[in-house]
Image 1 (cartoon, helix red, strand yellow):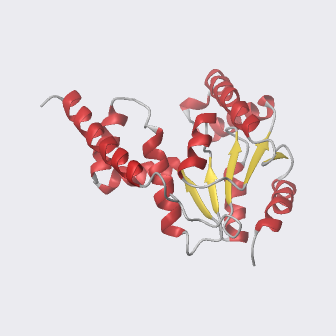
Image 2 (cartoon, one colour):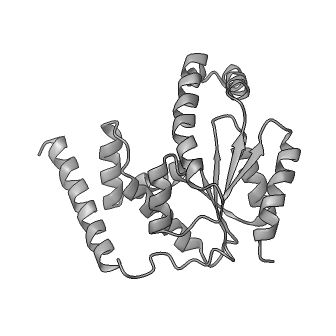
Length: 224
């Protein structure tokens, strides 16, 4: 059997399961999470904005669960499941992972930790407006969006500094500018969708000053 046929069958099997499940649960609550007690926070920011550092500080203070779609995908690929086979085939072909799979992984991770976690940090997702809409429909409404905002000049300078210390080939100036443009083009549409839930933080300040602003946002949401 050809590789194309294997990929097609794997994807067909997976999405057939998803379709049957969604049809069965269409009228039910997909994610019974009380976001008034366990806030769901989207953490957004361009490459070099320092959101990873802030996520670490949030986890340490608030006990939130940190969920990165990249980490979830890598863990699933290693699991050897039927879905892992589908993911491996997709990635080997250099194709984008369907958002349905990403949402399933996020939903499963949130529900698995719903009893223990005090809240959820969704790191770097959604990347597009349609992903945000799908997240709220399939999982739960986002409580607040924290956007770490810095100028393209600052982000470029930080990433070039990272490249010098790490030797990363993908952090040359031309590639950085392309990454930033792609991020900003999509991110602006995401932010415009949620003006009432959006909180912007100046990411050009020091780490401690930035975290002070983060605490002003999260403290009122946390149930002690």
